[in-house]
Amino acid sequence: MEIVNSIKETRKHIKNIKSKGKTVALVPTMGYLHEGHLSLVKRAKEENDYVVVSIFVNPTQFGPNEDLETYPRDLERDSKLLEKLGVDLIFHPEVEEIYPKGYNTHVEVLGDITKKLCGRSREGHFKGVVTIVSKLFNIVSPHRAYFGQKDAQQVAVIEKMVRELNFDLEIVPCPIVREEDGLALSSRNIYLDKEERKDATILSQSLFKAEEMIRNGERNPKVIEDFIINNIKTVNYAEVDYVDIVNGSTLEDVDEISGDILIALAVKIGKPRLIDNIRLEV
Image 1 (cartoon, rainbow, N blue to C red):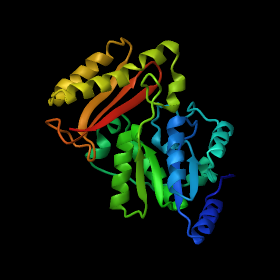
Image 2 (image 1 turned 90 degrees about the vertical axis):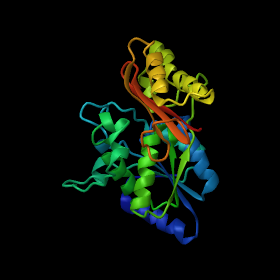
Image 3 (image 1 turned 60 degrees about the vertical axis):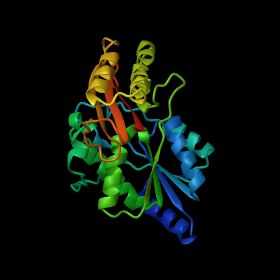
Image 4 (image 1 turned 180 degrees about the horizontal axis):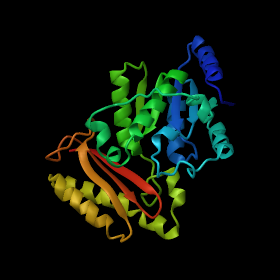
């Protein structure tokens, strides 16, 4: 496994691999890897000849009051985990390599898909996400790229970008990985103290109960959303950012729960803002 910091050297490796007719996979990450990330890597290894993992804490997707400076980083730990899985290359650039002095070009997906859910309270977030992902696609030129379904809106936005800008690659969404008690894995979970960690399970519990209500015949999205919000508020310090039920592919609002449905939420439990979702066919 090689750790490469430069775009030029990364492209040189990829050109060599592709000249041999091998398939290339990309797993974009911001590091501080957990089993959710590693599940993406394992899938990429199964389906491709050569796997690249990018580790880059992207400053353009953080808002002014968010946790850019304190976001957890540990390249040594991450590289050991990835080497064990047989990753071929880690692309770990400095910020200046991706955004050199005077950089002023961005990619943006416009419309409702980036304005709702996380886009409602994180202005500019998806502009930063789409910019860095498009740059990584151009640098690595993978045949397939792997993303976790925990960031369901991110997946939908990136799929739209790939379709509309004619990127020649396949986006592979992968299932959410959870702790035994249901909490969705996240690098930000390390911010939770013992009590908060226990209370954070209210997110997945609320989603699972909502799914049960739908399976039992409830079709009114407002009823389900209100149930989830009220259930989460039984943790008296929890701050609900949003709970929304939308179409799973387009993220459009739904008047009735039917077809491809995504129930997504974002909640502050103590310091961290946690996201979770379930997607189901009704």
